[in-house]
Image (cartoon, rainbow, N blue to C red; front, side, top):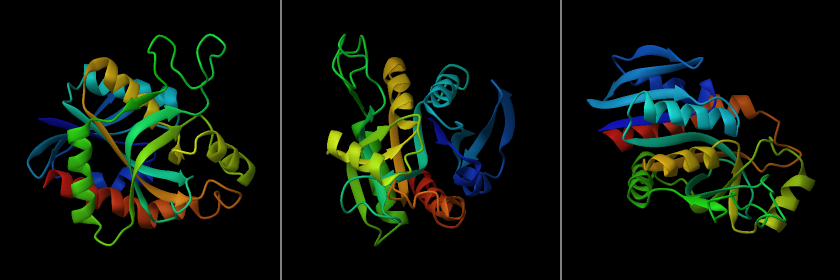
Length: 230
């Protein structure tokens, strides 16, 4: 079984790559794919880049070119729901595009021709990922549920509150997951995602975002991936 490990930013993936003893780089579509092993399991690690289009391109390449059997996304997100705070971990059960609106043709958020506004993650792989989080990060507060994706870095209190009001189920907001979830559904490939909360997607979101990824989130990602594959 070949597992894809995907992150949006280099800082999120660097410690995962350090766990791979024999990776070799393959450049496709302007992206560096690192093909190798982790705990003797076949792994392809890659930066999706930021945003839904970039993420969809990466997911399609992973499935068509590298023939991965499952896709796991790890990285950071902004907390939306009350109680989803910095340093917590969110495991996605489903994704929705908060900036998609083809109304009045279809209801707001619904993806045209799909008849739904959300794409579920794979139940078995998500449960496996949740168990890996418990082993890797004991004592960390973990949430499971809906995650919202959009092509905006949500970083104002006003926008965060508007999203909370429009999507009260959404635990967190990020920029790639819904695109990968849709591609994986199209191809019938299991997908799961875990995010460390870096901020509350409010006026303070820009703060020490990069240092948090480097010092906290990257360590979370590496620990979770290692627990998943060990």
